[in-house]
Every structure is written in structure tokens, then in C-alpha cells.
Length: 108
Image (tube, rainbow, N blue to C red; front, side):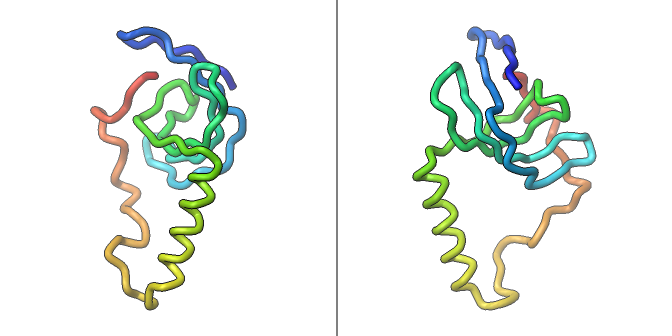
């Protein structure tokens, strides 16, 4: 998918090269996804952010080079392997009633 979206400071072009998966689905139809995305015709990167159902709007997110994505996987695997069962500072899953706040939704 390739989209051109206008912003006040110019045009941002993006192409979702590969959809990897949905991490969370919100009641609004938005999804937190991990994909491979090319921004402004640059080399594609791993990308984690919330997307509207039609992928024409998104929130701010994070992009990672392949080496960073692999390292993130290693760090999280090590972290979760070292935790005793039931020992968590973060809830296992958010309440699906939580949604992307209107102020967080942005057009690219």
C-alpha cells in the first residue's frame, strides 16, 4: 500500500511493504501494528504504531532497523525468561475500552 498524506509542513509518503501483525485492536477500529514501512521512499524499517482501519491515518510510532528489532526481541525474551511467574509491573493486557484518544489520532 502506498499513500500520500498532506501535513502542514509538507507531504509525507509511506508504503507498507509488509504487514507483520496486529498487536492490539481497539473498539474504534484502530490497531496497534508492527509492519515494515518505507517512509518518504527511504529504506524500509520495522515500524510499531497505531493505524486507522484504512491505513490512511496513524499515530506517532517508532521505527527500528533490523538489527534494533532483533535486539529488542532478544532483550524482551531475556527479560520475560528471568521473571518469576506472576511477577509483573505491567498489566498482562489493557482494557479494550481504552482507545486511541482523539488527540492522539494524526494524519501523516
